[in-house]
Length: 436
Image: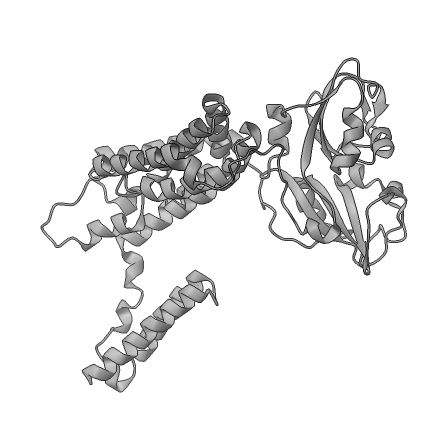
């Protein structure tokens, strides 16, 4: 029966590979299906003894498996506490606007962080960071993402916990063979990371896409193309001699046909109320067509400017963005004009367009009467989107918004736990899975 047993096992293996490649199911679901299949076929008469049922889930007791799970949790904790915001700020402060300098600093940063967390997680953390840095430095984001991806992989070779294969290596060593320590691979890994950074810095102009620069930031798409709305964010500074001072945001929006999604007051205001008075020089974040916004630039005291740190962070993709909300039948806003229920003050939403039946309304939104089934494209803080999602007046269509706020007040606690964990790995003779 050995031939049949080999055939069955290879069939399960081929099916697993096909499911992983095609992603017909979630990766974790596929893995559990494979385990279940192996366990079930072991009860067949001709498969007896191939895999004892009690060993089907024995892998979950593996040092490597527990270590990978723990590293993933630590990485998520560092992300939720705002570590990546601090990393982006430090990179911008040191890198300036030179493409080579930006690539060097962000590649070194992702390589260092990838040394202590899974490569995929490190790369995922740096995607929004790359967008922020690109918007602030003017370097095209496509020139940053490829070095980030490769250095996340290379950074995993700096320590024994940086990548799954290295974690597995210690588990697969024969008994009696000395285990590798945390930094056994660091010299070779450091050489690989430095070589990768040098490669992209020296040859990036020839190999990397996006030779130009980019200005402004792009909020989350959320299907904005279907509404025919250009949702690029532009930044304007209103000087002391600007004739717009003394007017409300609502009056400025009505006059120039723009959407003010943020302004720099004592604290940054997102989706400012239309009655918000602009009584001093300030900075505005605006969504509107280039032709319309050109009228603003023609005014004295109005200039395009890089955003200030506070306002820029408030409009960061982790804190705010675009969403689509639909009016359900039992909504309290049905048969009401947008101006009547004050969508910004009541819900924190800045409406950009309304999709109704087969048409799209982009102008005069305040006078539009809400109907059941209307789909609104809005810009808002994610905390306001979550509040709307829990209410009855709107239903959020796109579900990709963050489900939590950045808890920067817990960053120190997370860093202390991370430092203690690494210290125990380095200086104490504990199993990696136990320490993590």
